[in-house]
Length: 136
Image (cartoon, rainbow, N blue to C red; front, side, top):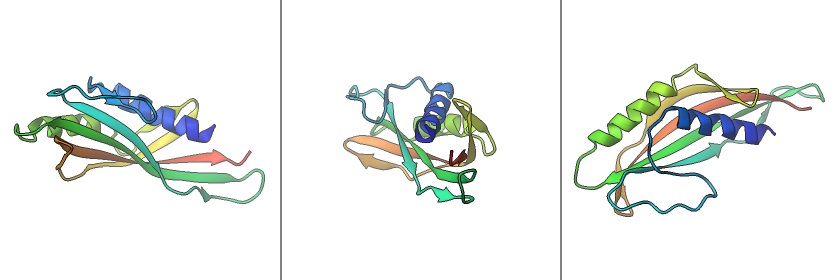
């Protein structure tokens, strides 16, 4: 259940940040509305590393949770920056998220450069995270 719980913690954190944007979630059909900003969320896990050996050992899970913020072209990036600041305000370094009892620690939050992708301005907000799970 660790993969499920980690994903649940990060998605719940995104929802708690209350951007109030239509959002594309992984594996769910989504079509953006022309002229309306929107977001897409993705989990980008790194390989799990064994923290200790044996049946009573633990594993370290790390990765990034990426929020792609999309806005109409031609109006500048002020709205994207404001949305990114809102996410950074929620996903503060050291914040512990709850994944159905599994603590997920936010390590850092940063942003990408702004690109033009499929007719939308896009800025990604990248949340680095860590979680520890038991082997059991």
